[in-house]
Length: 95
Image (cartoon, rainbow, N blue to C red; front, side, top):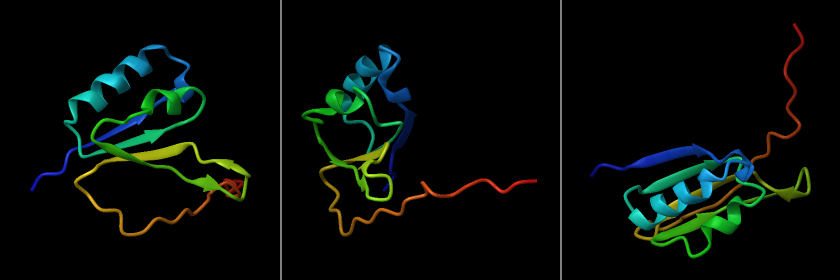
């Protein structure tokens, strides 16, 4: 079985073409998983209904807001477990 995955930086919906692109991809149902980065701003509004997909998002308790990452997965898959590991407090090492 081949699994088809699309990863997309949604740029928080700042670019108007993101909404149309997401709608076409969701309606097509071609991909098994959609990995959405910068899933914020108006982007969640464009996912309503989600066609043959279920939406997996997470609340980041360390920063007190919704994570800016979401996974859409085809409804033929069964979610067995969901956990959120925040990287919000990681800082780059000083050189």
